[in-house]
Each structure stands twice: as C-alpha cells, then as structure tokens.
Image 1 (cartoon, rainbow, N blue to C red):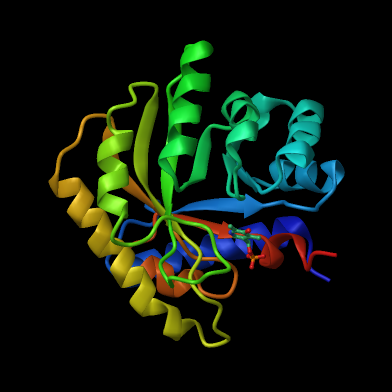
Image 2 (tube, rainbow, N blue to C red; image 1 turned 90 degrees about the horizontal axis):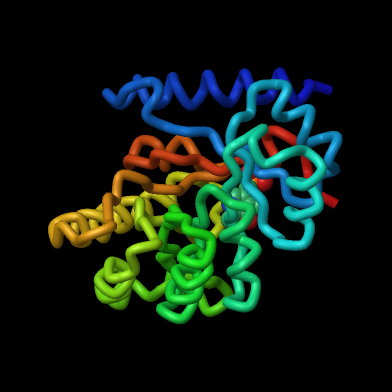
Length: 230
Ligand SMILES: *Cc1c(COP(=O)(O)O)cnc(C)c1O
C-alpha cells in the first residue's frame, strides 16, 4: 500500500504535469487534501507529508480536528454544505468557505465576519448539473447572487466551486467545467467590489485532470490521498 506521502507527491506531480501539458504554469493549481471522516492522526500525517491545504465537510468534526491540530498548521477550506446557523463556526475556523449558495448564508457569513473583524474568503457553489440532490446556486441566479454578495464588505468573493454529476468516464464532466468558466467570465466582466474571481474550485480524485485542462485552480482530492472513506 502506498503511503499518504507517496500519494501527495504523486498527485502533486500529476497536477503540475497536467497544468504544464495544457500551457499553464505548474504552480497555478492548488491541491486541497480532503480529510473528511479521517482521524486527527491521519490529517496530521497529511500535513507532515506536505499537504498545506485541507478540506473538511462537517463543522463539528472539523472543529475537533482544527482545535487539536492548530489552526495555523494549514490553510483550512470548508467544502461541505453549510447551514446559516453554523456560519459562525465556519467563519471562526476556516480560511475559505467554498459552498456559499444563498443570499441568506452570505449575509450571515458577513454578519459573523464583521463581529470578529475578519474579511472572510468565500467561493460561490454552482449547481452546475442542475441536480435536485445537490446544493449550489442555479446557473441563472449566479450573477445576481454575486452582485448581492459584493455589497458585503466583510466577505471577499474569490471565485466559483462545483461538484458536477458523477461519471465513471471523467471526460463527460468536461462540459460542466467549461460552463463554470463561462459563468466566472460573466461575473468577472461586471468588475464588482470585493469580488476577484481568480479561483475555480473544481476537480476531484476521478476528474481533476480534465478540470485542470479547463482552468481549475483548486482541486479537492480525498480518496486518492487518504484512501476510501468508511
Ligand atoms: C469528498 C469531497 C471531495 C473529495 O472527493 P474524492 O472523490 O474522495 O477525491 C471533493 N469535494 C467535495 C465537495 C467533497 O465532498
């Protein structure tokens, strides 16, 4: 069995090779190691093996891990579904929140960030496959939500995130990644206040190479680093 360190080294090399092969800079894509349902010891091993960015899905689980490990040991990304009543904790603990998909949630993040004098980095989650089972703002609503978010001075919108439909053949996800780039362009063209749009969080273990070819700047990889989840 390969170690976590071997996996991180291998994935980082694959990320760089893919970026270079499509004419992008080798360091233009950030690896986020997704550690949901993995133990504190496993996350620590990931950090010691070079994972500087960690992704977590569940607030309670994340709080326990981050308190034990130390907030400053890594850059923490919240990538799970976030309810407004947990926004306070997401703001306290996370450097980036990838899953903002409603005005209500954005407003609450702004309110909580203002209280602790923080500018919260966020991404907007797009339900790019328009699936009933998935969170994310609708494609049509995305631009309007970005305009509303731009009025919140304690929130900084850095880009978009998606979780496309699952395909065993990753090539089939390409069309969704292309659509994400289009939406990003539409929002960027508005040149909104507090909105920079340099990030595209897309690509997981099975489809990150296609996502990078289409412009991803953050890939979220769990299984290929830490193994299958229980
Ligand atoms: C679990 C998860 C991932 C990682 O998925 P893998 O297939 O294990 O690489 C990425 N993004 C989100 C939002 C997740 O929930």
